[in-house]
Length: 246
Length: 353
Image (cartoon, rainbow over all chains, first blue to last red):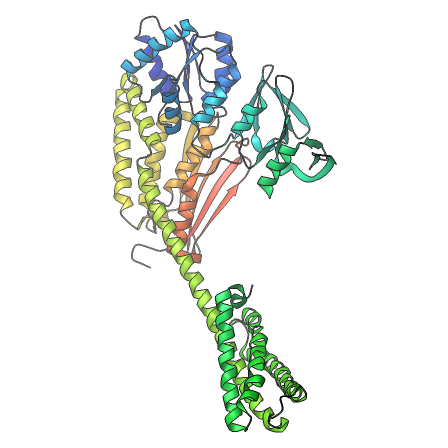
């Protein structure tokens, strides 16, 4: 099996590489010390499996998986202590290892991963997994978006609104639009429930950006944004907004 | 909102007191001025309630003129002026009420000349008691607020202690440290051994220090140095600790573990999020009877605004507030790429000087 090791600590990478060297059939094809590098290496090297740290600078392990898309390699998460992540892994049978990594457990996890790879088992989507791994009450902090070879990291407070298009969503942020393959419902479930509100079948609004509401027609309204933009609001959207801002 | 009007039961009690006052006035009138009891009650009760309504204004003046806020002449002058005006209004209302009663078929009251002195006397007493009463209510509210504030601080301090006790066994720190030891054993046994010593040193010191209220700054700094040395094994070149400590500060006393949470924040919320890492700078200097402690670090300009600085900072703030009140402060300067926490404490030595 061809393996990519992703961890921001050099010592932790060396330790995994050393252990993998002792296991027959395992080849470490590369290492990455942060999320951006991990995405790049995974695409260049197309490994069978990643040993993926969760907490890293710039991008978390979950975000790396999300950016790699459906053609990503298999993954075993490696973490020292992430109470909620571990609970989510247990519940959804996601492979993980705890630091310090025990060689016997590493072997077992690799064997399991090998059988999974051949059976093409599909699990939860990475955003869903990352939502489950967060402590209760912690909403999504940023959105990662692929734009060709570029990666945008958009903090949620910079989002003005989100619009659903055919099979993707567009994030509007200070006049720019960033496109991502995701459903509006999935994004909605991850955002902070009192800072973002679904005002329409196709729109989620950052409440901070709201200036005023104007009636438009029967059972529909217009939202006026700080930058002068306008968004439609449905009757259900109006009810949701009223509930939040009273 | 006026504290008496704000609550129904208080308003009823207040009204009761003035009705009693009115009854008393009626008795005085009936026995001293030869008025009928019926006339006296009819005259005194509404008038007394009017005085009560007038006296409600005291509250606003009590708020503007708390004891000690103004000079004594101004204090007395203001009250005297307001009091005399209120009294004049009330006496005038009383005389008006007397003639109104007369023309509505309830004659039998005393002459206006006989009534005026007694009204002046009763009105002065009523107003004086109201002013004193309002000051008592105000003092009671102030002391209750102070008590509640003190209680809140005590609760915060307790939480800080608990949090700190848990923090000692920070599982992330412990397991990552052990992972480093496991990794080093294969490649550099001497370094692995050093790491074991550093970790035992850290846990032993922090366990010992936790029991104490205040410790020498030199001890606090030694703990921070050990902590950073351990994290440096993990982070390697990415973590660069720097200490700038003026010599005269080592023997000063500080609350135990006042710096530790800040140093941990600097690593976990600062340097750990940077690809190239950065410098964690701890400085201490003495300046005009004050001890200034600072922890600073570079940070990710794209960090989400929602990412807090942890409970550590809030707890340190609460602890120094409990210990020093307004003689100490904690300032946070959060810039785009730089984070700095400054703590200023009174400089006290081990001998208490």
